[in-house]
Length: 317
Image (tube, rainbow, N blue to C red; front, side):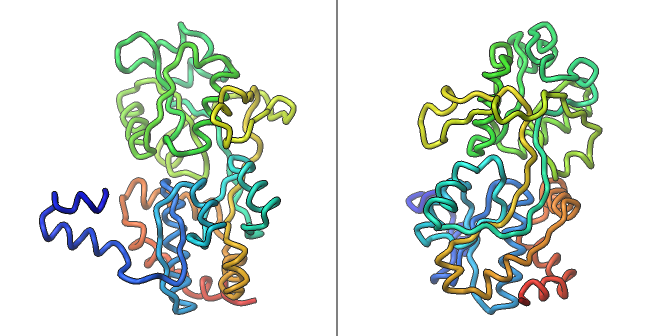
């Protein structure tokens, strides 16, 4: 919503909306990505830092690419989940070349690929099955005779990479590549499982969807760097110029923070270096926000309270 639109709202709604924004500058800013665990982590860091250091922390909803720009410009201080290899291009630019961003040493192991619901698993065992239009016709949900596959949210860099993979494997010719926000896609997965409708979609872990459903990951050729050639996403034609005909490389994510901020507040930087979430905890965060619909800040306050000693330990050298 733009501030010019405030005249369209009732006074009470205006007051509530404005209340979501800080009335004076915060001491530091954390960017929050648009997936559940990232939002939970951003708010856990906010609550923990405010409690241990007495600072005012603002959480800003923001895509990872804009986060890196903000980390260099000084408008963002912390990014809670930098996925790799997804953002290796940005890491090379802002961490390795410019030195504007640092990555915390502790990592959360992860993976990503394509998954099938139980009704789809009998037909789709390998990514090669997606190249068969007679098979993918069962993935049609809108009656146009062509199946659909969710490849991610519009702002995710992984979504662009899934477009590259669909082009490279060849199944973009007989499948509509659907981009939609994750909550919409997960609701579609729930409905597909409940109605026994075959569905294939981009998936990643840690994630709560694997607690809810018995999903099968499609087989793919093992990751081969020689067959995984991604042009920089800074190039407007990067999807067309890129090629990837093997599975994703082993993934992980970690906290990123601005080098200038670390110089200014080395104590908080040390805190970030000590944060040690497990894959199981990240899955629980995803479930709490994505399934139980808990508000990120409310969840974070309870989490920090329940893990008070551990969070206090993050602030120690």
